[in-house]
Image 1 (tube, helix red, strand yellow):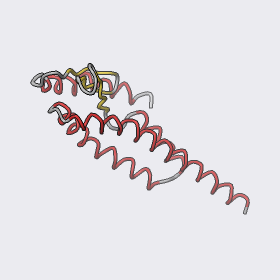
Image 2 (cartoon, one colour; image 1 turned 30 degrees about the vertical axis):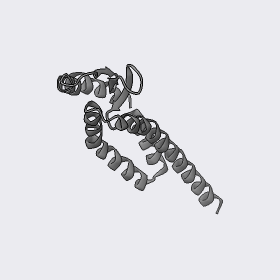
Image 3 (cartoon, rainbow, N blue to C red; image 1 turned 180 degrees about the vertical axis):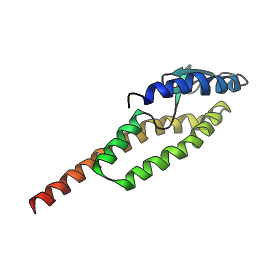
Length: 142
C-alpha cells in the first residue's frame, strides 16, 4: 500500500490536474487545487471557499477494505468492491462536471458519498473477517 499513494499523487499532479484545471478555467467562482490523492473543487456554495473532494478510485481506504475481504476469503465482497471502484472511474468525473456546471445538489451527494462509502466498506471488511474467524473456530471445535 506504500506504493499506491505516491503513484496516485503523481497521476493527479502531472496528468489529471493539469487537464482538469485547464478545463475548469472556463467556469466562474470555481477554483481547483490538489491534495495528495484528490482534487478539491472550491466553490462559494454552501459557504465561501467550500471544498468538495473528488478522490481517485482505489484509494488507501479501498485497499484496506480489499485486504480485509481478501483475508476473510470473501470473493463476493471483493467483486462488489472492485466493480464499485470501476464504476467510480466514470461517475466521479461526471460528478465533478456537474459541480462545475453549478448543480449544487451534487456537492451534497459527493460529500455524503465520500464519508459513507469508506465507512461502509471498512465495516463490511471487519464483519467479513469476524465471520471468517468465527467459522474457523466452529470448524476447529467440531
